[in-house]
Amino acid sequence: MRGLIEDCDLSEIKPKPLASVASAEHVSSGVPIPKAMRIRTFSPDDWEDFIEEWSTSLSGAYVKVRRFGGSGDLGVDIAGFTSENGFQDVWDNYQCKRYDHPLRPSDIWVELGKIIYYSFKNEYLPPRRHFFVASQGIGTSLEKLLNKPDTLKAKTRENWEKHCEKEITSTAEIPLTGALEDHFDAFDFRIFTSKSHVELIEGHSTTGYHAVRFGGGLPPRPHPNKPPTTPEETESRYIRQLLDAYGDQLGTAMCDPVALEAHAPIKRDFLRQRERFYHAESLRNFARDTVPEGTYAALQDEVWHGVIDICESHHQDGFERMRTTLTQAAALSLTANPLSSVTKKQDCQGICHQLANDDRLTWVPDNG
Image (cartoon, rainbow, N blue to C red):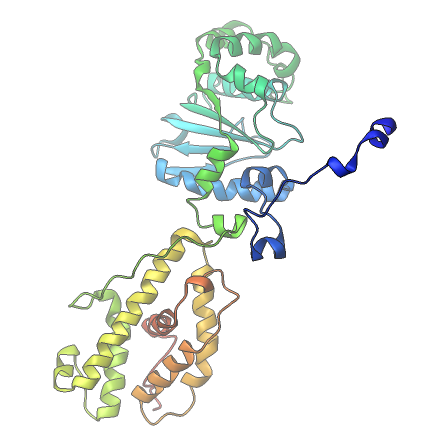
């Protein structure tokens, strides 16, 4: 080996040019690691978190999804149920493994044995599909075997005594004889298959965790809906607060939005405030699909902390209090929140109306 190094002409070694992909971002943080390669570097905790996040992408395909694991899991890791009958109806199993190597046939014999044995014991119906999911991917030999169910069955029989008989449960030996062998012979091995890293990433990309886990920014944000002509019931509290604020400045009670017809400038303001509220509502809906749960609530809290001192200071009337608070909201810098890149000034102002809708902000306090 030493001779090979000494004989190598380093002048002939030319790195692959990056000019075609170079950017300011690459200079500061390097060329991005492909997502499929990044999964292979996950620590045990990161892998568990990733699988937990990915499992939420399955909810659209099932009535419910449940995560199991640990001792007594009966070979079930993540179960997707097609009805409320759970294991006693059609269901799919996702077996997630983390090893320092691509998954091999020797890694799965006992897992096959558990599914066969516990379905024989009527702990559950055999799953419709059983997917192997592995942090280092599925090895070539195993992938080939999963594509040949008859061969997989024969190999499982051959390996039962060595890998299954004493490993399925620590409380008893499970020989492949009698009624269990009959169940084995009738078992459909076509249910066993795998999920690739590309498929995992595709599923994970539909969750609110993807941008935080892998970076790359948030997807484009849809245009917000226009406010309906007739306010929705969900708008009632912040609209009541707006009417109180207008009435406080005008010195007359505003019973409903119709009363604004006689006050053109106030009505224009009212329409602007409703647009801002719907702008913030669109951001809330966007957040549900693109960032982890609680991210939008954290943004609301940040806006609240940024405006509450202004809101609760002295103002000549409720309308002035609202306008000053909204001006402060538009000036906030919210760079720490994952939604900051898609949050606009009108979102921050609309969040104030969401907070008013929840009585966290009040334009006309009881004590004036």
